[in-house]
Amino acid sequence: MRFLPLAMSIMGGDGICLAGLDVETKQWVRPVQRGYGCLFREQVAGFRANAYHKVELGAASGSDT
Image 1 (cartoon, rainbow, N blue to C red):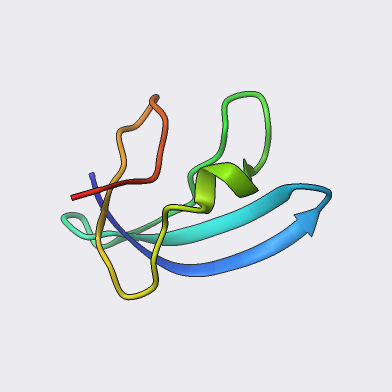
Image 2: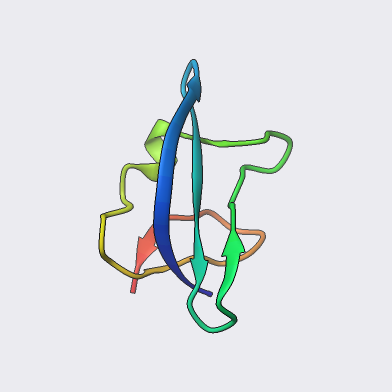
């Protein structure tokens, strides 16, 4: 999925809420780590503003396209 991050906020501890747009479907997406309701700082460190990212559902996130 091509993902465009549009919102990021600190949830507490190392938790980060990340939300954005699935570019192909134009739907909102909020990726989370399995078993948690968030991602963590090290997982969102690779996301850059105004950049598309490749996110594979069910896999680690944050790799650039």
